[in-house]
Image 1 (cartoon, rainbow, N blue to C red):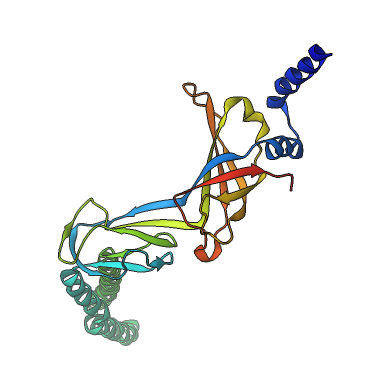
Image 2 (cartoon, one colour):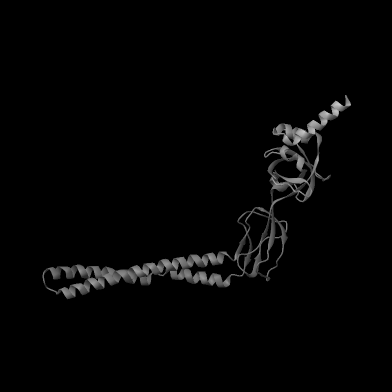
Length: 279
């Protein structure tokens, strides 16, 4: 009888890696195992500048929250600002363009009057050809000024982009974890801030490779924080990704779960306990 029980137990363990039903797999792991896990930010950005320069303004400090697109720092941009003002002034000047347009319009009126005289044989073909040529040149000069104005507008847009590159914006919504630079320091390739995205958080879990086929995307797990002072320590996370290549040295694989964190109530960088549920 004992031999039969042991054989059934061994058979159950042998079939565990081949479980394909999410509820069954969650039940097996959830009822019998509480697993150690780690809560980490879902994204960490070492934020720097696309161009070198001197730090002119720092608008946020450590532990401040920022939204994606917020300005967090500004490099010295006096030269770029002056270049932009000059480019805008050139793009807005219409004097030369208006002069060329008036000259072209006068050439057309002159050509029409001389065409009548030419039809009446009052002027020669040479004179008529000269009038047409002068009118055409005046039209080309007006078109040239229009092209110059368009180029001036493009130069102004380029100057605007050059000025914008002196502004450092946060690419994500998150919390300032570290400030590396101070006002007046020169930066080139090094970061100015470290920003962590805390909503959602990531829960990292390491499991034996024998359980690889028991974990499926979308499975839910109950997360309990390893902090006694935390009033509400129970949260629900969802499996986001499962490593398909195991670590041969340790015989383990990684599982990543997404943990919603509205209001930033759940701290990051803390250990936790995890148990899979059927729901």
